[in-house]
Structure formats: structure tokens, C-alpha cells
Amino acid sequence: MQHIFVSIRLVLFCLHSLACCLADARSVASTTTYPLQVLKSRLQQRSEVVELTEEGGVRVAQRAYAGVTKTVGRIWKQEGWRGFFGGCIPNALRVAPSAAITFVVYESVMDWLDVGGDRS
Image (cartoon, rainbow, N blue to C red):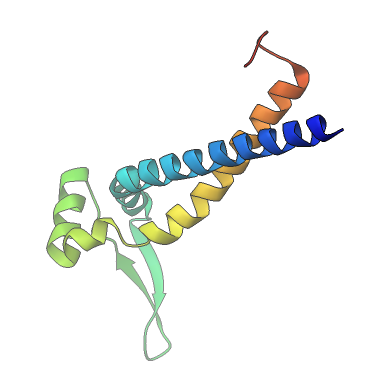
């Protein structure tokens, strides 16, 4: 009985270690590629947007993000390097736990199904 308890603790420790490593790796990957996410989201914004004025009227505003190089230049000029990393920490805090949970569940199911032959 004690042998089973030790085995379960070892499996849980291994899964916890894997989850932590994956969360760290996903956080690094997310932080590294975050400037591209910012660039992509700026380029996906609509070119014309309806806005409310201070007087309560409605006007059509033009967005200035037209191409990749112009968008990069505009972000750099107006916001500096911080413009490419704004919101990076909340994004990493959102991505890391979900990636770790996905990986642990996947590995657990694969072990339970015994897919892939001898998985040591």
C-alpha cells in the first residue's frame, strides 16, 4: 500500500515539474513573440471607426495603420519600445497556466491510454 502511495506522489511530482517547465517556456515564447502580436492587432483594426464627439455628435475617424513598416514606425515614434510590450505581463499570466494545464492533461491521457508503447 505504501508503495502505491509513493508511486502516486512521484507521478504527481513529475506532472507538477512538467507543468512548471512548460509554463515557464510558454511565458518566454509569449514574451518573445508579443511585439508581433501587437503589430498584428494594430493592423487588424478597422481603417474607419465611428466615434462620439465631446458634444455628443458622431464622426468617422481614420485609423493610421496602413502597412507593416508604417505601423512599426508609428508605434516606435509615438510609444517607444514599450509600445511593443504593452500588456505583455497580463498576456503571459493568461497563457502560462492554460498551456501547463493543456500539457498535463494531454500527457495524463496519453499515459492512461498507453499510447506510444513504452513511455518511461
